[in-house]
Amino acid sequence: MVDINSITLKNNAMFNIVMKRPELCKKCLERILNKKISEINYIDSEVSVDEDVVLKSIRLDIYCESEDTAYDVELQNGIYEDLPRRCRYYQDMIDIELLEKGQDYSELKNSIIIFICTFDEFKCGRHLYTFENRCLQDTDISLDDHTTKIFLNTKGTMDDIPKPLKNFLEYIDNGTVNDDLTQDLDDAVKEVRKDKRWRNKLMTVEEYAKATAKQAAKEATEATTERLNLLTQKLIADDRIDDLRKSTEDKEFQHQLMVEYGIIDEQN
Image (tube, rainbow, N blue to C red):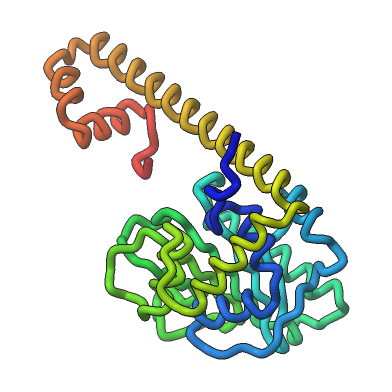
């Protein structure tokens, strides 16, 4: 049984519920973007938060618009693979949403997709990765398509962001309250925990998340074992016993051998 008090903002359902509070969501966006934004409106307001929690698999987490910009905020706990392509899919969903209102291409709002990740997608130690479309031959030339993708990493190690944003990411990661915004978020989390409407749903979603993570870990372990067994078989067949022995002690060498035999791609 899940302890309701163990469910934090890192939980996707909790995140969705808390971030449906316009003023709180607006403050978080302002902290992430380091600028003031106009009032935001939730475009999917006809869908209740209750449905949003249940239907999460195909929906944008938090989609809202200000006067000139559409925002999508996604909490990523490592459940999904290939976030860059997932980000591309979300961009398509936003553009379709905007164009269905009858807007011409030239009238499309700016769009900002924000992934708040509890892991380092790019493994560079940064807290913040911002992407825009630019010319490869001359990075001073922007495509100017008014789209931005932001990946935030709660596990960052660099001194690359303002202290307020670092406080926000630390709260997401471990629940540490360091300022007014993180206190407001913490108060909202505690309020949701006490709300009878959400207690059972939150606990059910948390159980599902834990089961999914456990299954993913099991599958990853099985896949690793299969790869190691295959490598062992190939090295024995080629009479490379010394290389087999070395591969058990040197992970980098083991990786090279797996690439050599086509067991994994070089990028893996």
